[in-house]
Length: 298
Ligand SMILES: NC(=O)c1ccc[n+]([C@@H]2O[C@H](COP(=O)([O-])OP(=O)(O)OC[C@H]3O[C@@H](n4cnc5c(N)ncnc54)[C@H](OP(=O)(O)O)[C@@H]3O)[C@@H](O)[C@H]2O)c1
Image 1 (cartoon, protein in one colour):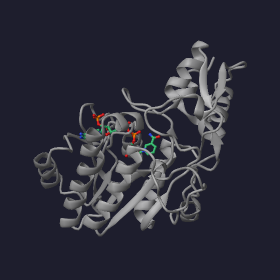
Image 2 (cartoon, rainbow, N blue to C red):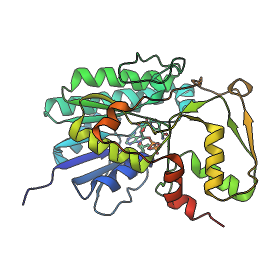
Image 3 (cartoon, rainbow, N blue to C red):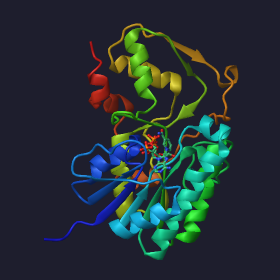
């Protein structure tokens, strides 16, 4: 029997890391790393490590001896990163470079999870060949990590992921969980009519990352199939919950002051991933199969 490879996944207590652990644990021996919250996936070995601590990261690599690493962990809220740039740099840049150094030194293939927010949103759709130009601190730091990791780890794959939605472990979530709660309770939600994304379901993105690990090199974009505004996404969500008169108010980006600048349209061109077999469903299909929505149906 062929021994399964040892896969180290950081950010395993978060939204995407949890989805990735669930997708990977029957194919790999998975160690899931978290910081402040537990890792809650059967069949995954849980480890706690502050990735900002160089000694702790060295011990982690020495004890796990991974064959592959997917670095998911990050400070992901752009407004937080804008307000606390040093906190963002510590985890989004310095910890990422440290992980790349260990991978480089050990000849360990590494996947780095990056973002559509490395683009400024003025010339969509964005393919892997498009020139990045971030406008927020978060986007700048993720791009700095991409560049720095590449120079430290020769076998680095960068998976840029879009705005994601889907099932999540306790204590984590995607942008739809608060929307589901508000819609269910009949509260009004306000959503941008002029902010466009190619959102994808976390479970499908997780499958895309595993596919890319096997087949892709360099950079790959794992966007969803459809480009739509947040307002239109909210309408689809309400329809999937069978809510007849959802209280969704459309607003424009310029009507709201946010901590971090918001790009208008960072839609991905994901043709490269689709050609490799990445197969996210349509948003309507993804929403129909999500447990977090079915549990709220009347
Ligand atoms: N969510 C999106 O829509 C989206 C869109 C584009 C790109 N991304 C990228 O996708 C990745 C995952 O995002 P997500 O939404 O899953 O994030 P998330 O739910 O906020 O999870 C973040 C993870 O990072 C871990 N972490 C934070 N600081 C840490 C530290 N000092 N040491 C060790 N672990 C630490 C957290 O651990 P604890 O919770 O245990 O503290 C958690 O597991 C990120 O790289 C992000 O840039 C996300």
